Image 1 (cartoon, rainbow, N blue to C red):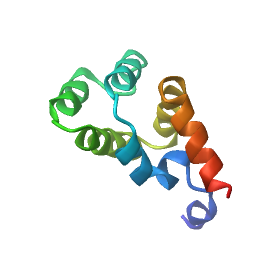
Image 2: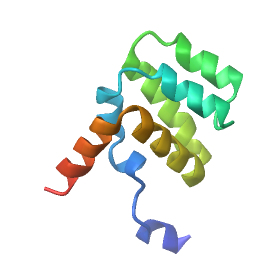
Image 3: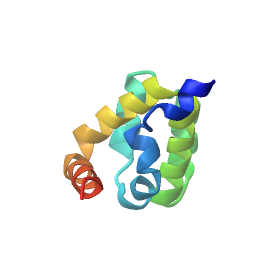
Length: 96
């Protein structure tokens, strides 16, 4: 589909590597996504089983990205709730 390449990438896509490196407290994010039915119990348990926060974020982002823009937006809103300063910092640094 030709129009898809023209569309602007979502915040989650553009800052994936920074999110993997900088989000460390993932459990409250997972809790919110589970409560809102963006992930199920199996995905929740699978992500929690990983040892490092980077592994957890990689796994979570792979699920979010695979599920499309609605999931990306839900993740972004949950991230804003739990990591407000980080999100603001990433937005500021991208405009410089």
